Length: 243
Image 1 (cartoon, rainbow, N blue to C red):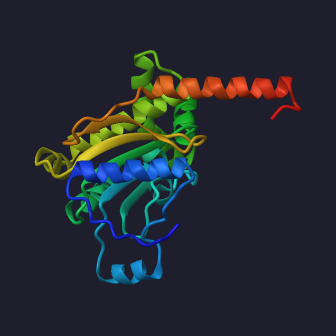
Image 2: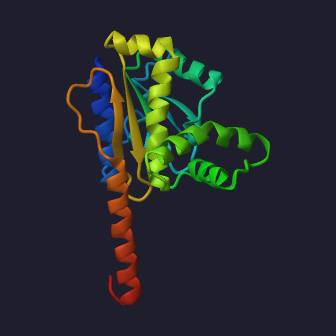
């Protein structure tokens, strides 16, 4: 596919959201367009950047935003930490992407099999934090583990979804910049959970002027995928010559 792009920049949160969603669908279907990745794009960006979305995602190497949303240079203002955990510097960086760039959507992206969430679950069960700054990182994720557990959700994929939702709400509550943009109809914030196996993203939360979108109960979706994978594995073990 061509790496060029002539599409106009999105003017509304819904248009920006649709671009992200369409790109992820292409990625999951292995039909990427690879937009805005040529030398012409590098030259065009020397005078400034105009990303249409801020992506706040987990730092996991298996979840590169430009790839999973099929975007190119200058399209996404990306902020990444393990477990998309926040601190003042992180929120300030996100605020810069929202206030200083023409971004229309802020996406919080968690993912299946997240090591940060798994470490927080283990720390809660053992009542023992990891050494060093990793312990501080895990401590920032623990409130999501506790919130999920209070509602009877203890599985990894359930806590991943809760962590995304809590991050979405936290950013709106603590940041007047983000909240103000949403109130003005200039920004929307969306919570995604990315599946490492399928390449698809499920929408688990959204705040802002996006019109009608379908929120997915990621708990049931991820559980169904896990059951399907387990059944497929059992079939392969039982019939090693099949497939």
